Length: 99
Image (tube, rainbow, N blue to C red; front, side, top):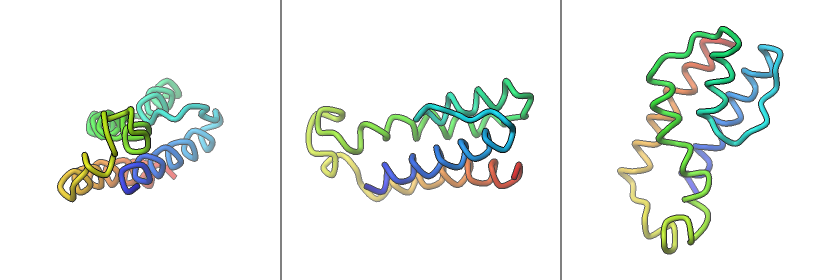
């Protein structure tokens, strides 16, 4: 659940930033939201794109057994969650610097 909620957190923050910039985002992809922001002339650092690429797959993989080939909890460990948390913090800092 931690992986899913980290992805959801970044998605919602990026949607808030899109809304602030005047164009709401209608996707679950943090990567697509960053591309949308970039298209609105918002400077997006490469590390934000990298973080989004790491987080986005967990929208599905962390919740559905068919996503990873078995029970998701068997495929996640503390090290993975800590890595995803670092990615979420990169995106959170990016958004916070723009709001």
